[in-house]
Structures are given as structure tokens and as C-alpha cells.
Length: 441
Image (cartoon, rainbow, N blue to C red; front, top):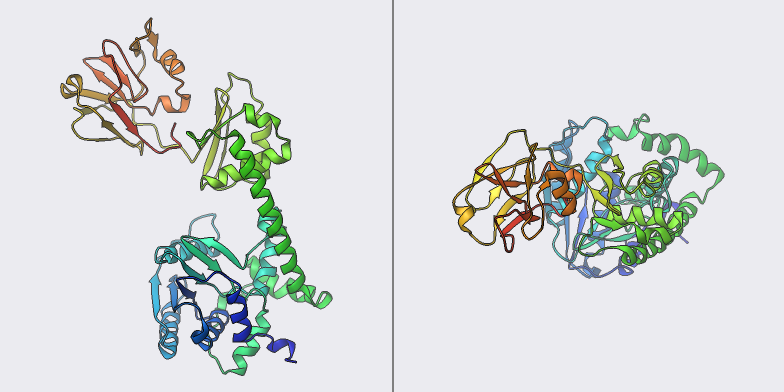
């Protein structure tokens, strides 16, 4: 029987890979550190048994003085193993208030994603110790089961997969195998800086836990898998609940009547899932609680709003409106000249105006303005002249859209409110299309 510290082997790695979907190709991410060097060598050792071709990718973050030397090391290593390598460059500028580690990770995955082919599988070298650290970090942040599920062995990613085939092995096992086979790798000096929280756990806390619980990696990994299964069930419940209440024509809105039948726990779960499904940052418990206490039960005539970093939720006429941060309001007095023959790009990221039909009143030339005091008109086919506010109420235009909506004016007279409605003396179908982000409604 092999000693515990030599439990890792290319054959065991191959067993793990055979339990995963067969990709069109494997692409292994290498940094030059111990973990990725072991993964690369082990994959090379079993390359003749792999179900798909193997290539490698290295990302130079440019964050430390040895970045170029690490890149050269990876290029030489891949050349010695005859494994094609793609080297990618990043120029990161640390953002105030954002973890440099998190920013580098996000940028790394983003640039690799741009290179991934359909059906390809990215292999990363995260191991069991990384999993323990991730679970502890999530636990100390107060995460729910989704966060505590930490890193799955496999997940769908881009048009293929992201796999972590070393999660079942410890760093000590990987290092023992590397030393036995005389491998060389690079050590990142920042890994020793215990003012970084992950490093503090790695060097100060996890060794103490391992003394009392020698099976720490296995038990924490098992807990993470249990949390992953629970998170999958919660997602299935949220998907079913969302389909019961969602207006498919308006996926950024939720009608409130359908939400009232759900208990608070399921409503929280639904909100988190809905927000995440729109690719917005999912807010924490405090924000979700505010939505339930301030927005959902608000008076019908109230206009409650809850903001968090990267998103906001509003209520209007019995619906919840989800959106990222709104674009700015165009400057006062701005007037754009338009004749409808070409699309008109609107300011402040508000999209563009398009004419489905070129009409005489458009070709005569109009001014495209934004909300101005004193505007009035009578909507085509309706009785009575209305103030701008009443017009917007009649057309169900949300308040936050009114100062951002393009208005067509000719000779001082309001002719159209975006693509919502025409004013007399115009009649018939509105020829305008206001193309804008789906959530800007």
C-alpha cells in the first residue's frame, strides 16, 4: 500500500477525469507554482490515455517583478513536454476597496474564457487544502449553502466545462509526488504574507485544525459536496417558483401578486436566484431583508428603492423592477436634430432611436429632447389634453424613465413620447423604436 503522502498519481488523476464528460479538448491552466506543475506533468504522463487533446494556458498578471520569469518558466516547461502553450497578458490596476486576489482571479478567468472553444474543458490545479480554505473563508463571511459548497469538481462554464480534478488530493500529496519525480516549480513569495486572509488560514489556522482532525480535508470536502447538493435543490425550487410568477415578456420585472403566496424563506431564495439569473451581483442578507420589509409591502403609491453595489430594485404599479445602476440623465436643454433616415444614438448610454417607417413629419425634421417642464399633449385616439406627468401615468411609464425617455418635438409641439405613444394631430401606429437595454423599462 502506498504511503499516505504519495497517494497522488497520474493513474488516480486519470480515474477522476474518466468520471467527467468527454470534452473536445483539455486546456490546463498553469501558473508555474507547485500545484499546476504537478497537474501538467501528470497529464503529460497519461496523455496517451486522455480522451481529448491537451493544451496549456498561462496568464501573466504583471503583479510582481518576477512575472516575466514565471512566464518564461512556463513556456520552457511546456516546450520540454511538447504541450502547446498559450500565454496571455493582463495589465491590472488595483481598484480601491476590491481585493487584489479577487480582481486577479476574475480577470484571469475572463481572459481565458475569451480563448475557450465550444466543448472545451479548462482544468485548474485547486486541491483539497484550497477547498478547506475556501469553505472556512465562506463560513467566516456568513455565506449560505451556495457559498459553503465552495469549489465543485466540475461545473458548466462558457460553452464547455471548468474542472478541478485535484480536489481529492492534499498539497502535501502533490508535493511528495513532485519531489519524488524531481520536478521544479516556482514559489510565489506573496503566499507567505499572513496579512492576506487566505494565507493566514493556511499557515496559522488549518495546521491547528489538522492536528485535532487529521481527516480535515476529507470531512470538509464532504460537507462542501453536501452544501452543493442542497444548493442545487434550492436552485430547482427557485426555478420552479420563478416560472410561476415571471412575466416572460419582461424578465427584469416580477409581478407582486404572485409573490404573496410564498413564505419568506422561499421568497428570499427566489429573489437571490432571480437577481443572479440576470447576471447582477447577488446582495447579502441585509439587502434581501430590506427588499422584503421596505419594497414588497410598500403602499401602492409609494416608490421604494433599494440599492446595492452593482444593482438596484424598485417598485411601481404592483411590480418589482430589477436593474443595474441607471445611466445618467441627459443634460438640461439638450436637443438633437433628427429626420429618421438613420438611427439616432442617444446620450448617457440610453440606446438609440430607429424609425420603422419614414414619415413626412419625421423627414421634415424633429428635435429629440428630454423631459422639460410644461409639456402637454393629447394622445392619439384619446380624449383630453394631459400634462406630461399624466401622460406618463396613462402610458404606465415608470418615474425613473421619464427624465431619460427621448421626446420628439416639432415647432415647440410634443409629437411622441419615445415609442410609447403619439400625440395628436399624429395618428396610426407609432413608427419609432427606442432600442435600449432590456432592463431599462
